[in-house]
Image 1: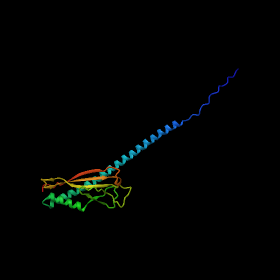
Image 2: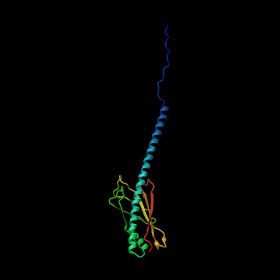
Image 3: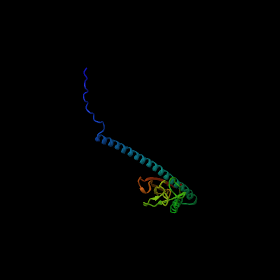
Image 4: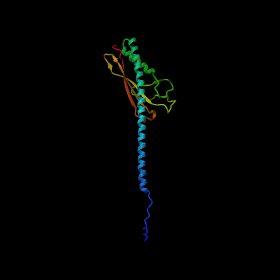
Length: 196
């Protein structure tokens, strides 16, 4: 019987990836990682904006509820102690603005006292004030800048004078960095004391 010899089989080349294939794979992985990190960064930015919006809304609510409380007491005082109630109410507000108004502490703002004394800007004033203690800045606390302004409304012939004030509050939640847009809130302080 005759043995058949095995034909020589060609040597198989070692299996592996070429440099082009490796470069394409690395490019795909790199693009995927860039996308993932970009989405993560966008998520963090959105989360920061939601926190800023919540804090600014809390700040505005505290300021405006305090102003409304002052307004109520000023109306009561003007109605019991003056003949021209509207004029007396205006005068009380002018004096209060000049002396300064106290506001309760706002959560998360670094303030060395329990009572905040917010500054009320005059018409045309573009200065932003820190709502925090600038001598004791803490990176763990919220350090916003603000501008609070009260402007007189139009004169009313029935009330014999101006019977409302427009209160406007602009808050820059990121302080000195201004990396986030300012939020603007407003309300009206109305003299509801009846006819003079």
